[in-house]
Image (tube, rainbow, N blue to C red; front, side, top):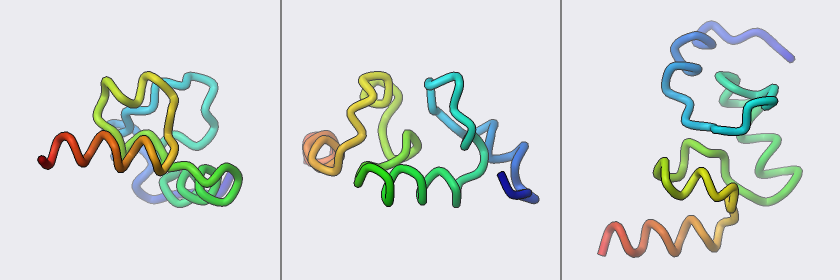
Length: 70
């Protein structure tokens, strides 16, 4: 894990509920991990209720935000 000058600030805003996550607060690593490893988006792209489902697929992101945006 690399260092991040915004680690503590990022952790306060991170809505990830997966507790053993080693990427919390390391936004660059989190995005890289989720997108390149699984073609999914990180928790911060989702509203809190949707994040808790752990369905972070692009399809779910589009479905959720299409409904919210109208």
